[in-house]
Amino acid sequence: MMAVANTVGLWPRNNISLYSPTAAPHTHGKPFCSRSRCQNCTTNSVDVYPSKISDRVLMDIQNSGIIACLRAQSAEVAIEAARASFRGGISVLEVTMSTPGVFEVLQCLVQEYPALSIGVGTVLDRENAKVALRLGAKFLMSPAMVKGILDDVTEYQALYIPGATTPTEILNASNAGARIVKVYPVSALGGVEYMAAVKKPFPHIPMVASQGITLDSVCQYISSGAMSVVLSDAIFDKRAMCQRDFVLVNQLATIAAFTAQEAIRKNRESLSQMQP
Image 1 (spheres, rainbow, N blue to C red):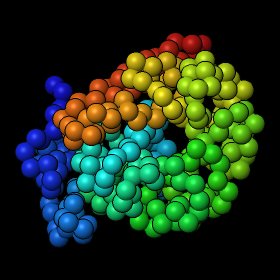
Image 2 (image 1 turned 60 degrees about the horizontal axis):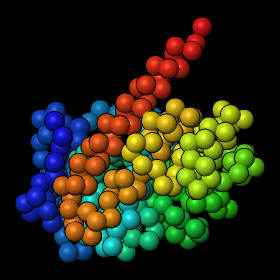
Image 3 (image 1 turned 90 degrees about the horizontal axis):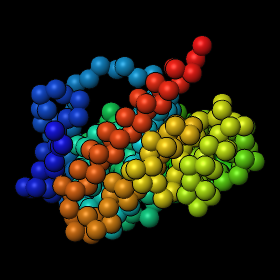
């Protein structure tokens, strides 16, 4: 059954645990964000992930097949949209630097959802990278390779996903130490065909397809070699964000999460059939 967002008392609200089979409410402490935007929470869970943060994020990216890219007109809208997407099954989320109060949003979300992989996107300099890492970002994304950020994330055991356009840029990013590379802007470069073409010479380099990807093309990107895809408007629909329609955001996130899981399953079945 498709999950839907709670339409009563969206701000602030009690959050439902993503991992409890009984969907028990979180326990709340004192709010630490301004205007009581979010609440502290605790969860009981078994540590089944690797101990290193970057390894856990990489595993989450591979297992989910989606990095949700959140841009919002305010911090309040960003936090509520993120909550709606998490209820829909999103486990990896980047909040872009263009979102007002991006670091406040980050701090709120990482404390509300400590088990999820939450990071910051469109990071263009080391100064902002260091602030994001200090506030708990588990990964950083850039549209291009930013020198020095790889060193910064190593200190915090976080993951850096630089953007690359050409085969040369992809290889250089990998050789510099990037464990995964974002192929950007993939739609403008030829979409699925381009993704498949650049993956052929670099089967050992994990890649994320980013820019202009729709829900109906997720399966094609996964089957063409992408470990994951970045979805923005496909989840955080512009009209829904403007109208604060978090029910729709939740529904789109649910569809996206299911679509990606099906794509991963089909791709694994296809690969297993190819093995002798």
